[in-house]
Image 1 (cartoon, rainbow, N blue to C red):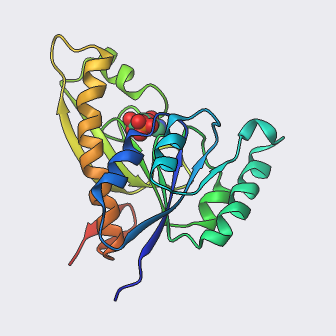
Image 2 (cartoon, rainbow, N blue to C red):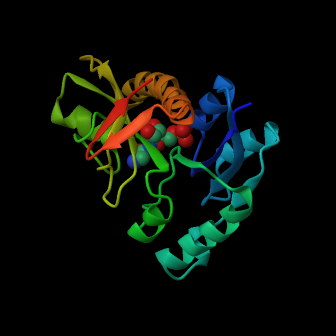
Amino acid sequence: MNKKTRVAVFVSGSGTNLQAIIDANIPNVEIVVVVSNNPNAYAIERAKRHNIPVEVIDHRNYSSREEFEREIIKKLEPYRVDLIVLAGFMRILSPFFVRAYKNRIMNIHPALLPAFPGVNAVRQALSYGVKYTGCTVHFVDEGVDTGPIILQSVVPVYDDDTEEKLLERIHKEEHRIYPEAIRLFAEGKLHIEGRRVFIRD
Ligand code: GAR
């Protein structure tokens, strides 16, 4: 039997992506821990409901980003994690952390990168007036939302869209492509060449 891919999901908020990944029941993938920097994140309840261990590491208790990240690395050690999945984790990871898990960290962003990186991506897209936006799953590199792109999905913007309505349709796509990207990783089908990610059988 193939070895299971051991996944850590990092969250800060509501955790609908975490829920989608849990519900997808991806073969040969085990969510071994959920890490939250926010002790009040609803995602923690979701993890507990599914008996997934939770580590709360509140960034406000650390005097520097590096100290915070050293603590995460220490807490992760016993879980022997193969892949870190950022699912609405609202802290930027420094090059120090990214190097420790090189090509083993994924993020989901609610826009078609490289458009609208950073915070409030949906608001940025609406106010820019684009006709199409969407979501992107990418490997994390040392920049902010700049890593090699794994999957994207396009979502049209309608005239009567509000940020809420548009976000709801983007979320639907996120919940579809994030489990898919994790499945591809677990099956060893993702190959990174420079900035490009190829999906191979
Ligand atoms: C998601 O829409 C994700 O794309 C976004 O946070 C939301 C988390 O929702 N991430 C970013 O904006 C990262 N820059 P969730 O907690 O319900 O999964």
